[in-house]
Length: 279
Image (tube, helix red, strand yellow):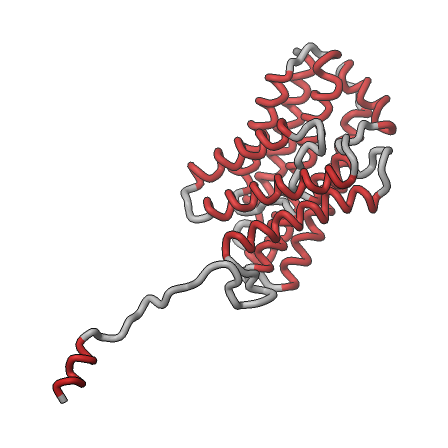
């Protein structure tokens, strides 16, 4: 249990950092890109530790799959509660840009901050593993240079997996946007946990370009361009399809609704024709 206690302490420290940044900058909406940095940092830093428990803890620390799935769900639930609307997900930021909800410069700042948060989280996690506080972390430190890739299938299968999972995720998230956070946050956490567990033998369904960058892009087995094809292009393709299916069009690109016919809400008075006949 010492390994699990060390991991819990690490999780608490990362969560406190993200919550502190949000509290300090909550009154300055123009600095929302820094909140995206904290959101991405928290998600990647904690998910790296969950990944460590999955890879090492199950046989070195005696932690079963039920523990890892529970920890992943708690991580995603905590992330949704702490970070709120700050997703730490570039595909969500780009979707909001395509919906005309956010302009170009804030979107670019948000995406850059999310990748910077993922990059910093990776280095913080590597430093944490180098401390070798437990046997699990000692083994992980030895394995850090030769990590296992999350992409366990061909590029075509990986692209299709990420695309379908992103399509499902964004469709459900779009439908839940107007719901209360008490419903939205747990449902999204359950959905992401389910997709990650279901696709663990394929791509792990990160559905988040910055998260995938922090978790698997540095692992051998595929080139940077091949990872980008699966985890970036696949995720963005699924997001675009979800937006098209949900709205019928992509507002940033074209205004005409391609899928659904919109009926006019206002009709002329019915008595007009009768009055004309009497005339």
